[in-house]
Amino acid sequence: MASTAQEALIAELLGDVGKLHDEVKALRESLPAIVADLNERTTALHTVIAGLGDEAVQAAVMAHVENAAEKIAAQALRDAASTVLTTTLQVPINRLESGAFAVYKAAKAMQRSAREQVALLVGVSLLAGAVGGAAATAMATYLKDPVTHARAPIIEHR
Image (cartoon, rainbow, N blue to C red; front, side, top):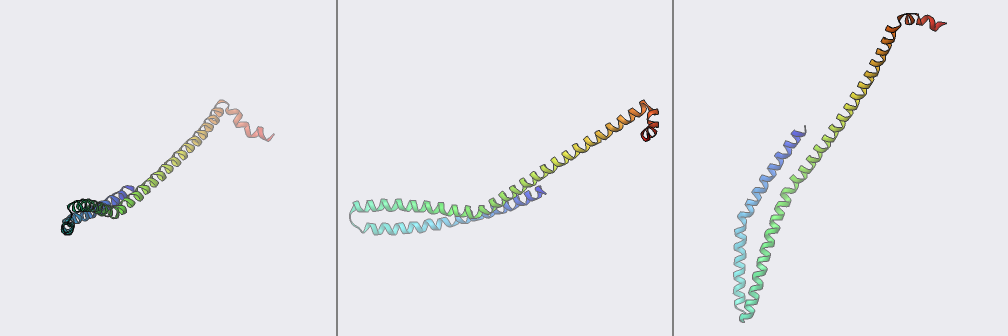
């Protein structure tokens, strides 16, 4: 039973990994459009900055804009990857955790059952040994003195 549940969980996990692969592929395909849009906006901003006049101001603003654009692009990529990974992998991770816990509980129950069976077998073995020992003692006593045992009911009534 545990093996079947485990196989089902693995199959679900593989399906979810396939979905994750498709989403990452779609993200990879949409990135060039995002980068192109960012480049267009940066070019438009460069044009506006060029119209400011003072070269020192232009250089400072340009450096600031390029630094900010790099930070924004890097953060956007991290956020997109984090969102894809979180939304896609969280469900299979939760399923895997709950499946592992179910397998753990089943193993504990089987271990408890095995202990109970061993205790029962030991108890029955001890009882059988005691009964066998008592029977052997009675038989040995009878075989030593059969006359006393034959007269035992008569002796007890007196």
